[in-house]
Length: 138
Image 1 (cartoon, helix red, strand yellow):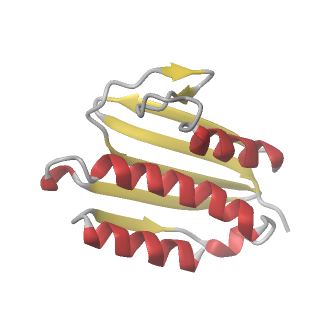
Image 2 (cartoon, rainbow, N blue to C red; image 1 turned 30 degrees about the horizontal axis):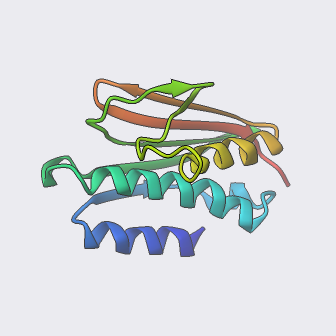
């Protein structure tokens, strides 16, 4: 988790994106490192790609991870001025070729469901958010 956050923080600095995060990585110990990379790597790459195209004052990404009793929650949000189409609860790639793009969110959803969790993606008032909830695993 630390490696992913450090790498994404450097990318954010490169693109002048304000990146704030607060997460208790201890609650992720039951999840394989490759699956953590799939969730956070894909979600943050998508947010960085979107934010880098915005005016500097709107280049903001927020990541919050929280645990309550036996549930882990993750909330990631960023500004998004694109009009997104959603299919089966996930945004459709804006890159045009579905054969080569759009797998990041699907892989996040696959990993989250593999651990008994749920993913909700939403675009409301130009704020794109991903909310993930799954049981805390030991």
